[in-house]
Length: 305
Image 1 (cartoon, rainbow, N blue to C red):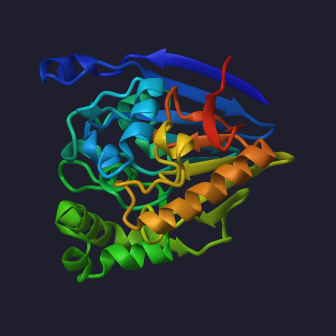
Image 2 (cartoon, rainbow, N blue to C red; image 1 turned 45 degrees about the vertical axis):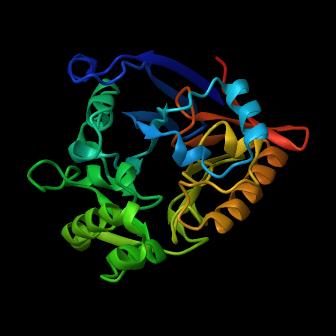
């Protein structure tokens, strides 16, 4: 297993002019015997800190904020898509934000170009879930498919939830735009979509693992290559600080916080016990690392090369 990491600046001129913080975008790759997985930066989000901090125990929260140097007003989580290159397949996990979500995100195609990969090269796009930063990049400004040659794949439960016309009425006002945006895009790409369930081998060496809670049908994916294993975790473990230091705390980012807790604690225990690498969508330094037991909690250890 070989590791490589590099930091690149992608398309930041316009971002700086728009008042968006200039961040280095980390790319990390891991090479197995017959495949290579590479993180593909889509930029970063700009989220109110209250989404993470509201309602949490003040004293313990302050300790975590100090340990990870977390600001009180706004957090800037990175967005790391995963590119799997194996044989004649070039597989992308999630499609990024596209141009319509946040000015600090939507850099996926520039990042792919930096890797020498074009949109036409993508053979499969496999979705963890249908939140904007994972789905909206599937269509361009003209509502055309960004990956015209790709087979699109999504868990059946996730599809059913977002395509249901009642979801917009039940999801809650803060996420109403998520529901409207997801339904519009899924309806547009429906003819290109295939579906799978928990434990299905969606592609050779790629097995779906139900990790519900962040969304009703959220999926992670176990990548197998010989004796090597890696988990593409999506947002099941949504950050490198609170999710590891206090996985038992509810996350405001999860649509079902209690189920999110159960999923998160199960995954952290499994990943630490098996020493399985994790590629996390919102984890730092390209998102690739290991889960390390740290007393009664955990910490994220990015791969050092």
